[in-house]
Length: 298
Image (cartoon, rainbow, N blue to C red; front, side, top):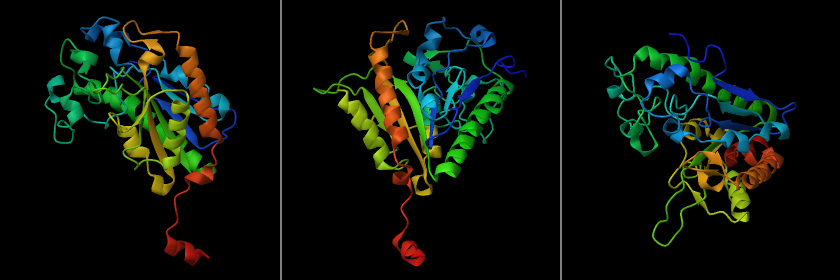
């Protein structure tokens, strides 16, 4: 089956002229290039189909390559393919053919309609008019999903080879979170899978930057980090992953999906975050050497 992106890139890697830090930035949900074939398959209007986008996140982090770290950004939309899921996390009700046991059809994400190929967008609106074929799923997963992850892995491997450590910053946005009791919802959620996917200093620095700007910062609730954070974050091996969720109301209108007056200020704040993370001493992220091994080396 011919790729829907046969004539243009589904995603791109923006590399710096010179890599100066072990960081890799990924904006996997900010794509807004909707293939015509996909639009013909959906029952949603152009604005509704965009409700799952992390709109403009790639623009917020756009200075990363200028400061010395690569940025991988999707052009394909999240409603079309979600690379922050397992590769074959599929809803069997979406397909003409039966799905074999090799597919993950029972995860909570599939049950919510948000598998690798989503069944719904925000507010639980169904995407498709008719069921899909497995060839369609293979085209998206083998042709786009797998190359996207191969790119992330290659960049992290290069960073680790150059600096002895590597850091994935998984960049996302979230709908405005309602207050809980007498507490306002957070503006920023940092996800490190409860301290298991990165060194504490990474999340601490990010929290310092955001809280210093007067924003409310939460850790791991309600977003602890998705497939990318969980898969790549191996701090014991010197590879770290931190997910950052930014509340959309801070920089855009969540209904019209247009930038609001806060966009410039948020981009400046993200620039401050980028500068701080890129200036960090990579030695602070080196995995600790067990005492026995340290004494043996000495």
